[in-house]
Image 1 (tube, rainbow, N blue to C red):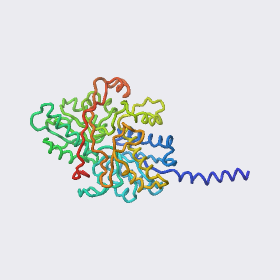
Image 2 (image 1 turned 60 degrees about the vertical axis):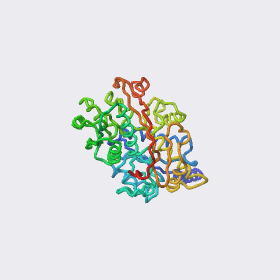
Image 3 (image 1 turned 90 degrees about the vertical axis):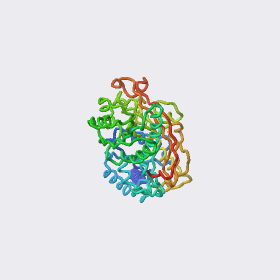
Image 4 (image 1 turned 30 degrees about the vertical axis):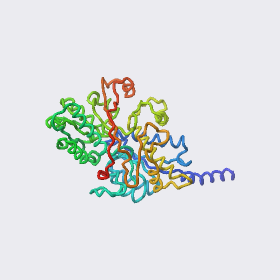
Length: 427
C-alpha cells in the first residue's frame, strides 16, 4: 500500500514537471466572427500543422508544443484580453494570430513582451521592423511576421497587371479604379497605397465604395459601380460579403473586373457564388493550389489527415497558407532551440532572420520563399495572381468534385515581382 502511494505521489509530482517541459504557443482564431469564412480553413491549417509537428517531429527539440487555441470571434478586445491571459498565466513564447485590428492593437504588447506574433493580417504597417519608415501611425514592429505579400504590395501587383490588361484589351482613355470594402482597419489597410499606385499607373481613381464585412444586399453599391463606369474594382473584404457583391452586380449587369484581396476569394467562395465569381482575380500566397503536384503536397496531405482521416475534405488555398505560416514559426523555434538553446521569444525572433529564400523543410513547391531582416518584414515581394474560373453549375457536388471535374478551377494569370523600395516600407 505504501509503495502504491509512493508511486502515486511521484506521478503527481512529475506531472507538473512534464507539463512545464511543453512549449506554450497561442493560437488566435476566428471560427465564429465576421471573417470566419476564411478564418476556419486558415486556422485549421495552422492547428493541423502544429499537431503534426508534435506527432511526427516530437515537437521542437524533443519538447511537445502546448497549443492554446482561442476563438475570439473577430473581436479585437477579446483578442487583447486573451493575450494578457496567455502572457500572464501561460507564458506563451510565440503566437499564431489573425485579424488586422487585433494584430495592430497588440503590436506594443508583443514588442514589450518580446513575443513573435505570426498573423493572418498582412497589413503593411506590420512590416516596418526597425521603425525607420517615419510614417505617421506606423510604429516599429520587430516581433510581427506574416506569410506572403502585404495587402498593399498584393494590390500594387494586381494594379500593375490591370494596367497591362487594359492595354491588352484595347481600352481607350484612362481606366477607372475603385476601392471597395468595409470601413475597418483590414479593408482600409491598402486603400491609400492602392489609390496612389493607381494614379501613378494612369488610372482615374473613383470615390471608394463601402460595404459591410458581413453578407447583405449590396445592390446599391453595384448600381454605383455601374453609374461610375468603373473598370477595375478592388474587393477589400473576405469572401463571405464579397459573394453578396458579386451576385448583386451580376444581377445588375455590372461589367467590371473585380480584384479580390488575398482573403477575398477561394474555392469555397467560387462554389457559393457560382457564375458570379467567374473572372475574379486575386493573389495566392503559396506556389501551388490544392490539387496540383509539388514535392511538399505529400506533406500537406499527411497534415490534412490529422483532422480528416478519410482524406476526402478539400483544403482551399487558405489552409495551405496556414500550414506555411505555422511552419515558419516552428522552424524559427528550431533555430532558437539549436545547440541546447532556450526557446524564448527573443531567440525565436532571431530565428526568423537566419534564412533567406526560406521554404520550410518538406514544404518545397508549396510555400513561397520568405526572407525577413531586422529592419524589413516584407517576407516576399512576389505577387502570384490567379483567376477564378467557373464554367458550369456549382450547386451540385462538393468543392472537391467540382474542382476535379473542372467546373471550377484556379487559373494562374501572372506573377509580378515588385521592387523592394525602402520608401514603401510600412505602407
